Image 1 (cartoon, rainbow, N blue to C red):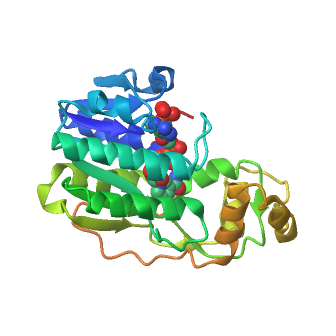
Image 2 (tube, rainbow, N blue to C red; image 1 turned 30 degrees about the vertical axis):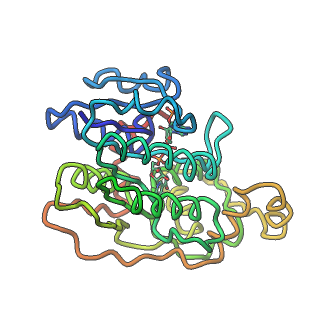
Length: 280
Ligand SMILES: NC(=O)c1ccc[n+]([C@@H]2O[C@H](COP(=O)([O-])OP(=O)(O)OC[C@H]3O[C@@H](n4cnc5c(N)ncnc54)[C@H](OP(=O)(O)O)[C@@H]3O)[C@@H](O)[C@H]2O)c1
């Protein structure tokens, strides 16, 4: 039995589908079973737990061999934050897994580091360190930005900042394939695996591609950096937007293993198979 915390999300839903297609037993952990409605045709168990609640976790992962953490607290319902979900919540999950002898596959971000300007990246780094020191068998999968998420965010053609900074985008389907392999293959333990897409794009380029693909004539609008700097005083998302507009967000992927899908972000947008796994 494999548990997926975040199994209702964009990535977690795709991983749940892949694992069940292999005939494996899957348990999806969610704070609210109503959010698992799109998984109803999959043979998955749904259990209710919030990883911020330390006491509820052992029962949620009891009887599993592996738990995948595909959660984040960057945005979303339930007053989440990177500090409470990615740092403290993951620590709860990891401690319970170590106690029960359950392997942990942790989703993180390319660039996770203690000094990173984006809070999420610092919290992911803390979770990585916690896992490595926990005594649980582990694999860390770090990914770049999911192009399917950003195409949804750019549904309105509004770019935060100048939009000229190159950023690596990956298809969530490619990430799901890596997580699946990391879950199934014991020789992937004690490894940090980085996955990114085959090219970097600026937000201006991505917005313009989406505009043409959607046949929209509206011009791309920008939220100027000075406005972001004002918002950054109280919004961690605005601070993240400034960082994404200014710091190095590029990535050069290693040659893929045989069978590892590598989707061009533009193809991912044209053929959005990933959306079948998305609750959105
Ligand atoms: N999106 C990206 O661009 C990107 C890039 C690199 C890495 N990642 C990582 O990939 C993973 C998946 O991202 P995603 O974009 O697919 O996520 P998503 O669709 O936004 O889903 C987030 C998931 O987190 C769960 N969650 C949040 N707080 C929780 C809590 N306190 N307890 C239990 N579950 C909680 C939600 O479950 P419920 O709402 O059902 O409780 C939901 O399933 C995350 O670890 C993320 O950091 C994402």
